[in-house]
Structures are given as structure tokens and as C-alpha cells.
Amino acid sequence: QVQLVESGGGLVQAGGSLRLSCTASGRTASTYAMGWFRQAPGRERELVATRPWIGDTYYGDFVKGRFTISISRDAAKNTVYLQMNRLNPVDTAVYYCAVATSRRESYYHEESYDYWGQGTQVSVSS
Image: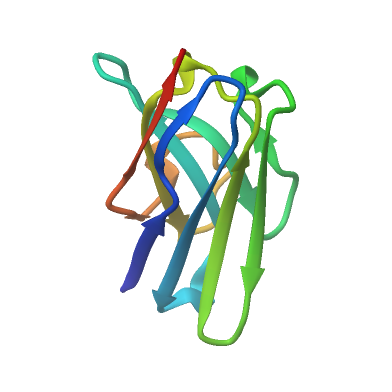
């Protein structure tokens, strides 16, 4: 089992920045990728960014260079960060971190992930 704890959401004005964190503990040795997804009201969950242990980092098209995903690893836990800059109201959503513990052809889809954080609300005011 892997436990995920997210933090860092909140309310920010358009043009501002937020940094999300998600710490994974437990059976993290079998991690293949960590990623961030988001879900806005009335919309499907979509990929924000994924960072596989092997392979390239990938961002959703809407990111357009504004967000950066990074990973910190030690023997006991893995932490994934999402630095979000130049936020705008359309970025308002619940943001979820996710961990994949199986080898996949890609990590672009939520079906590739096995564990999910509780979600953190990001709200951007105009």
C-alpha cells in the first residue's frame, strides 16, 4: 500500500503562483511514475503533468510552460511537487497527485495510476 498526503492548495489571484506538494509513503519502492491530475466542476479529470522514473516528463497542452513538476526521493518516501506560475481562473480545479506502481506504455491516463491523493482545491480569482 502507498499513502499519499497532499498540501499547498488555496486561493490566489490571476497571475499568481502556488506550489503543491504530495508525499507518498509505504511501499514506494515499486513506484514507476508520479503525476498530477486536475478536475474542474462539470469536467473530466485531466492530466496536468507526469514524471516517470524512466522516460520523459510530460505536461498537458494547457500548461504552456507555466507549471513544473519535480520529485524528491529518499529511502522512506517520495515527494512530488507542482510549481504553478501565471495562474488564471481556468486553472481552478481540485488537483490530485497519483502514483503508478506498474510498468505501463505511458502514464498519460488516470487508468495508469494505482494510488491517489485526497485532492487539494486550487481557486484562481480574476
